[in-house]
Amino acid sequence: MTHAHPTPEQPLKIGTRGSPLALAQAYETRHRLMAAHGLPEAAFEIMVIKTTGDDRTLIDADRPLKEIGNKGLFTKEIEEAMVAGRIDIAVHSMKDMPTVQPEGLTLGCYLPREDTRDAFVSHKAQGIADLPSGAVVGSSSLRRRAQLLNKRPDLKVVEFRGNVQTRLKKLQDGVADCTFLAMAGLNRLGMSDIATGGIEPEDMLPAIAQGAIGIEWRIADTATAELLSPLHDTPTGQRLAAERAFLAALDGSCETPIAGLALVEGDEIWLRGEILRPDGSQKLATEGRAPVADGAALGRELAEELRGRAPAGFFDWL
Image 1 (cartoon, one colour):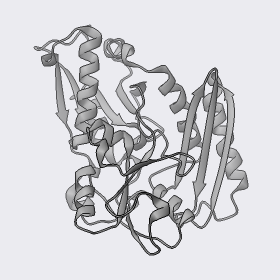
Image 2 (spheres, one colour):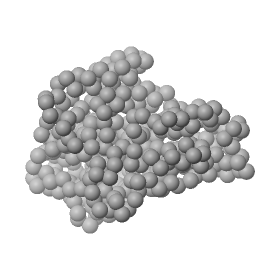
Image 3 (cartoon, one colour):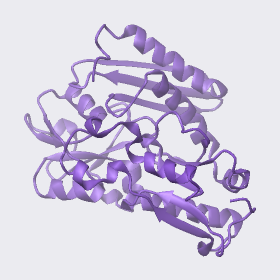
Image 4 (cartoon, helix red, strand yellow):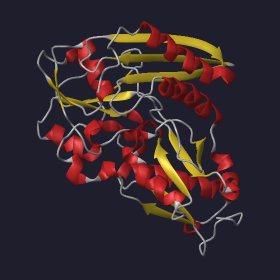
């Protein structure tokens, strides 16, 4: 796009995955753009792009995600469409995003962050502590699995994939006694009543960038950059800079149990992070504070500290 504002004749093309949550995030982005610029809905076109992570033949096989691909699983095809000029912007769940963008693309607009907590969802228990020994937990997240087994090695964790709706049906069908979802996703879908309760970060540190929506565009497309600038939430950007630097320095991919959460408190940023062995047998945690402007440096510093503390073989996960 080269013109300053999109019009119904030349709409801004918004790329997204097709899941109900991804669409809710794309609609929120469109709504915020309409409000910021006084534009009609017709000035935007939402384009659903199927990603490798949405390929049911691969996903329904319940193979571990790391066998199919890693962090680019839900983003690669969308980014290819943008490089090719078929879409103008892409709306992403930031916890799915690799820490490096393809050449020519940039990521620098973050919507205000939602609740970062994990939600505990169960018809049988009120929380992790209430689960009887040997209870079956459904989760496809290596982080949640490792954190849970670290706390409760007596639980049985089974592979549990699919969008929010698919997972809730599996729970209803008795495939597991409980599962975990991101509170942010439930809130955005208007389904927060599904959560039996929210899990505080002290009990289960969330995934890096959980609850954050990022918007990506072509670096050369300055008109779109200007269009997006009123949408950017600075504190969310500051928190993600610290968290994603921590992740990048640990070389985190989908097969790495890593958790982290940054909070802005006054002019300081407080970052907590942890790494775990996939079986939950060992957890290394750290935290630190720095001036907000030094958030990324703090993330790198804490990652290096954990690397230094990790015994030989700790990172031999693959």
